[in-house]
Length: 313
Image 1 (cartoon, helix red, strand yellow):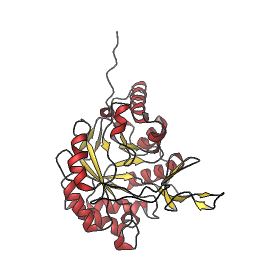
Image 2: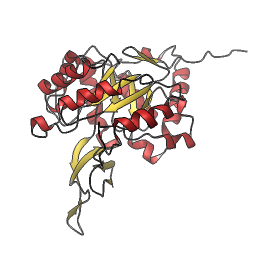
Image 3: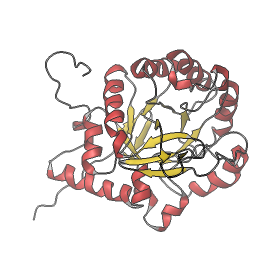
Image 4: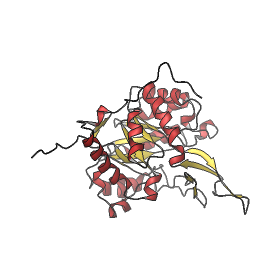
């Protein structure tokens, strides 16, 4: 009787080894999901972004459904670092999967302070959400430009010895330069990418469908954008890339891995199917077994390149 050896789904993201490449996108994951599947099947746990102090978030409505995805303008409501340290961290320490703390701030010094204070025992890595408004540059996100990206990542790097992931934005005309700047600043990995700016109007009332007018577009409609960014950044940088944006199926996961992602994050799909991440872990193992793979590393970055350099349009 032939017994197939289990497939090694483990991946390396810098200094971290994850038992598989599936993890949640920040803001789409909470302890409530423990009611529907074993959270330790995931490669890592990425928590909701926190800010240093308490923050109420944006006015309602904060979310609206769209064809091909959703818009959100949550506004990063946060209970602050003290709540994270005293309540959130003790809860997640019961799990074996590495814990990734997502942080954000509106100034470089506030970012640095939070980074230092969140560098706690039990936190395996820090994801710096540099896609949020920076009050020091007229509200433009740090990740909109290479210079502000490198400056903030370099400042955070000085405050922690933990692995530092830079979560980038698709709302820049310089995605490769921004990614390279994050690498130069000391990031250990890149997350490509956060949501894309968008808006929607209720034609009956002629009012925006979000209380904040504009918000972040997520879901299947942005997958081609996130996939393109992942491909570009993986080719341009030496540090690992974590793909994020519109991933909902096994084929989506495979596309990102083949384009060069070492791991992926699942976001909007979890709202539609709370068990989607557990299902994708199982489907990925089955697929790798049927392909005769010994390790997922065999397919990472194996996209077949056309002759010559790819051109836009």
